[in-house]
Amino acid sequence: MVTRVATVAFEGIEARAVDVQVQIAPGAVVFMVVGLADKAVAESRERVRSALIASGLALPAKRITVNLAPADLPKEGSHYDLPIALAVMAAIGAIPPDALAGYCVLGELALDGTITAVNGVLPAAMAANSRGLGLICPAATGPEAAWAGGDMDVLAPRSLIQLANHFKGSQVMARPEPAVATTTGRLPDLRDIKGQEGAKRALEIAAAGGHNLLMNGPPGAGKSMLAARLPSILPPLGPRELLEVSMIQSVAGELKGGALSNRRPFRQPHHSASMAALVGGGINARPGEASLAHGGVLFLDELPEFTPQVLDSLRQPMETGEVMIARANHRVTYPARFQLIAAMNPCRCGQALEPGYACRRGPNDRCVAQYGARISGPLLDRIDLRIEVGAVTAADLILPPPAEGSAETAARVASARALQAARFAAHGLTGVVTNATCPVPLIEEMAAPDADGTALIRNAAETMRLSARGFHRVLRVARTLADLDGEEQVRRLHLAEALSYRGRVERPVAA
View 1: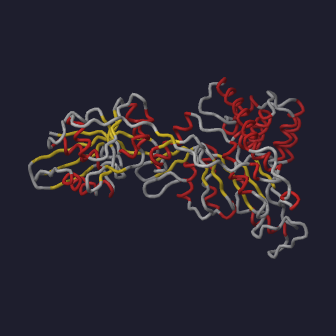
View 2 (view 1 turned 90 degrees about the vertical axis):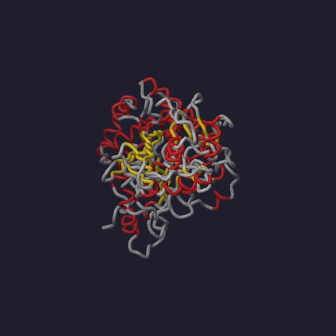
View 3 (view 1 turned 135 degrees about the vertical axis):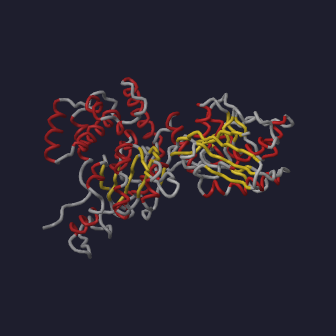
């Protein structure tokens, strides 16, 4: 007789169904796990054996075969411990054989029989709910699983003994409640920044339309401070975005206590990050910083200090909004619709644009060009807003804090995004929330300028040698500027300001 328990295998944030089959038959005493399992799954034999012994059960002196079907699907992770243990318990009669029929199971076992937390409970719960199943998961991740559906049967035991008692009717476990992450402290406020009014304006435009932004300026100008205050003016995550972001965080093990938060992610990797760390990969094809920033902000400080190959790996996700990691036996796709905010110095010494400064590395223009050349042209073409952030003077620093802070700016951003949401809903676009992600045919219709604006962008496209991508990104920024002004028509002044942000960040090399 074969005992079956349902569980899942993860491919990106997708949870694919896996059938755990256990057979106990006469023969040589052996505990065998088959089905293309990795090292962590193969080691589950010893964890299951010890957990059962600690729970007062002993494995029979027979041949125990565990098959993880489908056999051609790679099985990775420690979450197969609990389904294997429960299938063995059902096979030896420790729990009713039909008790597990309506559940999907995942969890890791400790040697003393307690059930410890695993990654990916939220996508597993969503998959189980879509298949009409309940979920058995560790107690630490029960609040996370409860978000999958209010009527879904969720069991979150702390140990094998507690779960066995529940199935026998001697103990009843309550359904866990969905948990919401508590906000700790206030976000950094724009009121903390004195001066830099032009940079604040660019930050507001970037937040309103979801545009990528590059700030170029000397050390100490406030570039990192500006970027750190972007989350304070971004609207909270919508229900669809919250689900996608939380599923990625669940797979990556970033959900603390199973609690979900509607704050947009803000990821700030160090410039020494590898390609696998930034876009994802490694042995188990884990999500990288680009996917962990999905729905939020990816801030790259000291942009030219990143390896050029690592930076260029962002070009595809910036265009498509997803990362595909290819392996010899399978492919994994993670969402990666992030907003890139980058900061850089004008040159390696950082002072090349200062009046009267002579760079030790040669002419200032040549030093600037060589440093900026570490950023490829195709990557720059994908950045909508490029601004120069000048040094803050002492006269700015002694002034009192500005009257307007993040709250006032956030209100304007929310109004602009509400206009965008209504416009996209009228066209039946459910997955598009900002002008930056609007499809090209639609942005040409939505951002069609007036007669003066058409003449301006035609001449500017030839003078500035805009690529097709650059042309459409100018239209997207102009559409955002019109939304901030509350205007339906994109006018010449909107296009003029949008074109001013397409200036190159490096200076031409001196002859």
